[in-house]
Length: 251
Length: 272
Image (cartoon, rainbow over all chains, first blue to last red; front, side):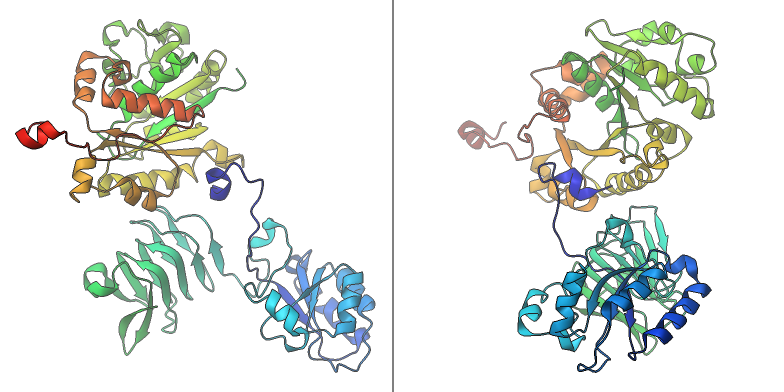
């Protein structure tokens, strides 16, 4: 159900920022031969996961003065079946090189070096903005099986993720169930049941934009709607497990 | 016809007005000049023939056609009032399992050769009959009453429409969903006794096709076997006409969603 397309048949497209989980290859030393050998070995272990996977090359750990053969590095990465889409943590000069190779220069709040004032401002609202086809939205790596749902979870539906967090960018209907071993985020109204930390992790938390849930549970400790504090009903809240009890606090 | 649209009228919950809507909608499409067939999927509890006022002319039914005991044009009943409108009644004696996937598909394909619109009147529930009614649909009208149990059942049906229909299985664009609120009483909404249009839209988050007010005309129409849309002076009839026009792409403002303004006289005399 492509909601946006359905509601608005005037605009030919939407231009919006979205975060993607993406592989980052951080070069630890300026030894491209060694990097090539080790990368080939890594790919050999899980070729399917890495085939055509987009990757960002991070240069922030290398000495600024050192000359890095960026073209060579990109071709090594490409030869292993990755699709290099950008670089990060680079110097002014490397930025120009990247532009020449049609690679995006990415800035995260943590990737110090490239953050001159201009880029900081530009990326302030969307820390990661990577031009990727929409089909890449699903996690493509073994390291992250978190799931992001953009459509409502309807009554009677049950969504479970095996690993990581579950994020729902819409509402969860009354009579629906969502389950994750990690955290649960609902950027709509949570009306159904949410089970975070379903593998027993007491550190998991539940976040929702509007609490109207039937039941919330973390690591098997649950609270039913009746037990929610009245002043937090229909509010944006954060739920965590502390001292064997669930605590609901306003966001 | 290559452009035939199959529309399912569904709700999950019973008694919300699926058959009333199917009859009104099908007649509305026919009145606009579209060749329309309305098919009763409620095998065992058929009602559509009564609402359409053709119960005395039923010889063969949907299940007879599926079982090849009758040809489709023997079972189709032409509406006497409206050109372009045909009814395929359900069987009252068989059970819902008689609707086989292949059988239903064959009949719908045959209907597609002649008709512009095929309106499928779904049974209540989420069992086999409802599943068959929605499986081949291109568009769905989800009929909802302004009360929480109906809204939750509609939410459930929307989940099934998004996951269990042929369009989804074949990876085509999903079934286009429309929300139709029936038995709406703006006065009760304003007194806080009923969920408002806004509340329901917020929960279901699908586009609103229309709001049919709670109306005496509906029961009268049912008992007379005349689809309520044929009563052009009734509020419900007008509301259904608006819905059909919106469905066909016209931009029409919502009516019957605000409480009636009381006239000076009714204020003085308490009448309405």
